[in-house]
Image (tube, rainbow, N blue to C red; front, side, top):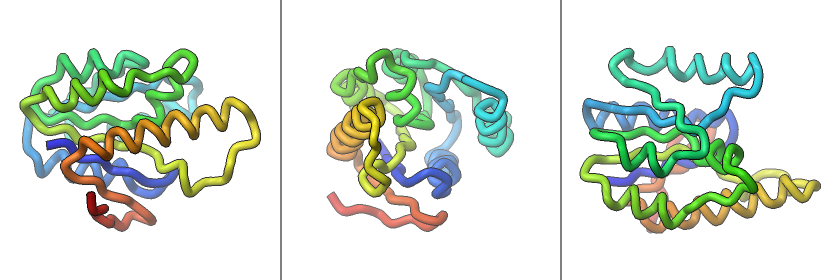
Length: 161
């Protein structure tokens, strides 16, 4: 099963995804494509890590998300696709490879991603490229997901295919 959890910044999407992963059963591996950039970012990551059970290992893979997914066993929680886009050189993610890796898994995967279509239109070229890349990736992942949930203010709405 592939489950996509999408929402804005600070919408509660990670907590919703953690709950879904918990329901899918142990073992759960958390894959984080983040590269820590400063103390504030490290503190945010730590809040997430402390909230999860100690039995859930965290794999910090940077831009190597596809390889991390391919090597993981059991339920996987990926947090987040927006971070993956950000840490990938040139923002050129291999979405087709990620979809193939997700479909090839025997166990379930829960993906967290940022909704960029409801936000302010970026004024910089880099901002527009990020929105375009993540928006297209979100559409591609949603098309292969069994379930897609939109999170707004901690509330969840299941989106129909």
